Image 1: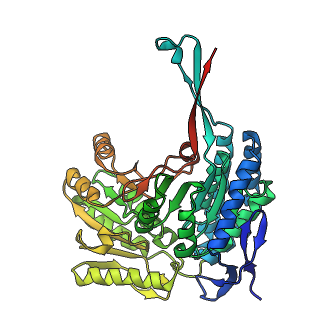
Image 2: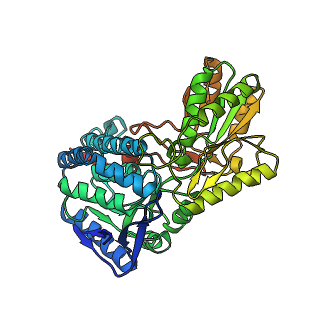
Image 3: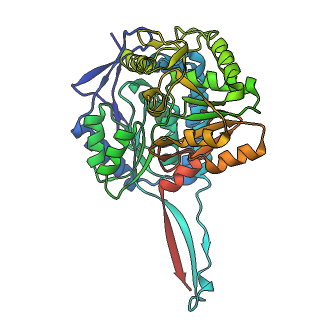
Length: 473
C-alpha cells in the first residue's frame, strides 16, 4: 500500500474522495497518494485560519520559540526530508541536503525577526499646535496569508513564505505544488510538533485551476505570496483586487564575463550553476555574455567541465544532475534546443534526452529571438554569446522582459560600478553568478520577474500593516 498524504486543516489531517498520485521523478513509479481539495475544503481551511487569528494572538517571543524549534526539528529530520526532496523533485541527494539546511536557516531567520518587529517615533510635537501630542508607529499582522509555492525548491521556498508570515503574527493557508505534496505535509507536521497553535497553518492540495482559483476568490485572505510563472502570477494579481501580493516569477538570467575576469572562477561558477537542480531555478544561469577576447577559451573550458559532470540517479551521492520534474518538461526543453539548432545555433555539448533526463547542454550561435534566449528555459541549458564592449553586453542583458538577478565577472571597479548602475535587475551579483542567494538578503525582481521582496526581514514589512498611534496628553 502506498502512503497517503492528506490536507492539513485546523490541526487535523483530512482525507477527501478525490486522490492523485505522487510520482518518483527518477523511476517514474508511484511514491504516494494524496487527497485533493475542492472549493469546500479551501473554504474550511481559510475559515480555520481566520478564526485562529481572531481567537488567539501569539506573542512575538512565543512565535520566536515556535519557529526556532521548527528549525531544530528540520535539522533533526534532515535525512528523511532530503530523501523526500530527492524522490519527489528529482534533486540530487547533495542538492536536497543543501535545501534542508537552508530551510532550517530560513526558519531561524524568521524566528529572530519575530523579536524585532518595531515601529518608529514620529516627532509630531514638532509641528504647529501639537506640543501636547506624541506619535509612533507599530507593525500589526494583516490576518490570513496565502502561501503558494513551486516544485523546484518546495521546502525552502515554503519556509520563505510561511516563516515570515508566522513571525509577523499572521495565520497561513498553504498550497504547495501538486507535484510536491509530501514535502508540504512534512513541513506542516514539523510546525505542528514545534507547538504552533491549531489553525495557524492549514494546507490544501490540488491544482491551481481549482484550489488556486478558490483561494483567489476568498476575500478573507489579506495577503498572497506566490512563486511561479508570470502568466499565473498576473492572473492571480488581476483577480484579487486591492489586496496585497508578493510575486516571485520567472527569469532568463544573464551573466557577463569581462575579459579581465578570473576566467577559472567564471567558468566554474557559470557552468555548475546553470546545471544545478537540472537548471530548474528561476535564477539559473541561462545567458552568458563573454567578451570576445576570452570567448573561445571560456567555451572550451565550459565544455570540458560539463563533460565531467555525472548525470544519473539522484540518490547516488556522486550524481551531479538528476531528472527534470517530468518527461514532458524535458521534451519541451529538448524541442527548444532543436528549434535553436534549426535556426543556426550550435550544440557545443549535450543536447540529448533520455526520459526525464536532459543532458547538460551548452549552445553557441543563438540569436535574441530564440526561445532558449528570450524565454525561461528552466532546464540544464545555457547559451554563450560574444560581445565587444561592456555597453553592448549591458544592452543585451537588459533586452529581456525579465529582471530578477544578473551576474558580472570583472576585476575592474569601473566595470563593476557601471553594471551595478545600468543592469535593470533586482540584484546585481559581482564576481559570482545570478544563481547566488543568501536567505537573509532582499530577493526579488523587476519587470515580469515580479513585485516585492523575499527574505524574512523584508517580506515581513509586506505582511504587516504600519499603524500610526497618536496620543494626546
